[in-house]
Image (cartoon, rainbow, N blue to C red; front, side):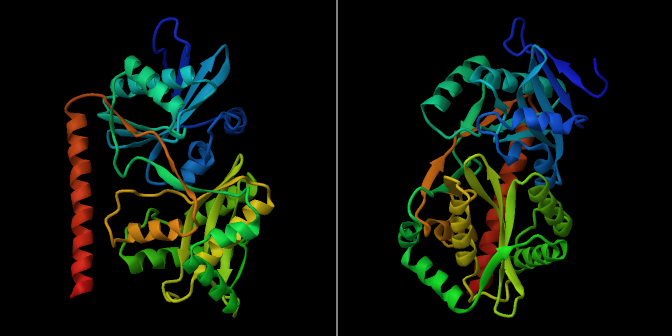
Length: 368
C-alpha cells in the first residue's frame, strides 16, 4: 500500500479494480491533465479551484484506476462526519461513475462517517434517470428535492448580440443604459491590489446584508482566485468602475468547455442606486460571446426561496436575462451508519430552522 493512500477494491471483478483516497496530490498537474477531458468536468472538481473555493472544508481526493490509467476522479469535502461531493464524480463512463460512488461510500462507512451526499454534475434527463436506477440497485440511497439540489439559469449565446439584449427584461435594458449614461465602465481586473479592493467590497456587501461570509479571509481567497484564472487561463475577473475610475463592484467568471460560469459578484453597498451588476453581467455576456462560448451560466437558482427574501431577489435578477432553467438530479443521501446519520440530519434541520428564524428577525427589524 502506498504511504498516505487508502486502497479499496469495491467488489471482485469490478469494472473499477482500484481506488485511491488521499489528502494530498503529489502529481497534481498530471492528474489535472488526465481528468480535464472527462465529460461534465467543471471547476468544482478542479483540485486547485476546490481548495480556493472551500477553505473551511478538508478535501479528500479520490482517483479510480483501471490498467494503470485514471478512469474517475472526485473531490470529497469532509466536515465533521459528513462527506460531500459537488458536481462529481467525473468519469470516463457511467459504469465507472457508479463504481466510484460505491467505492467512496464503502470507504467512508469504514471510516465511521454518518452520511455521504452526492450532487451529480450531469443535467437531468433520461441518462441520469437510468443512472440513478442502476446505482440504486448497486447501493441504496435517498433523494430529496429541496434547496440543496442544484439548478441554474443558462443563457444560450447562439443568438445575435442585438437579440440577446432585446430579450432582456425591460428593467434590465433600462438599467444597462442607465449605467452607461452614468459613465460606468467594465474592464478586466488583472492586478492584485485591485483584487483586494474587490474582496473588501465583497466583505462590506455581506456585512451590510447581515449574511455570514463564506470565507474567513476573503482577500486571500480572491487573490488566489485571480492567480487561478491567470495561471490556468480558466476565467476572468471583471471590475465595474465609476466615472472617477473607482472600483465599485464586479464579477468573477470561470471558463469550462463551451460554458462561462458565474462564481462570485459584489457591489459597493454605498452605491445602491447604481445598477452595477446589470452592466457587469451584460458586459460578461458580450465577452463570453466574443470568445466563442456557447452558454453563460448564472451560477445557481433556488426554487425554494421564500417570497421577499434576499435569495428571491437574486432569482428575480437572474430571471431578467431571460435564460433557460437547467435542472440537475436530486441530491443523493447515502446513510453510512446509525446514529451518525440521524445526528447529522438533525443538525442540518436545526441549522435550517436557525436560518429561517434569522430571516424572520430581519423582516421584523425592517418592519419596525
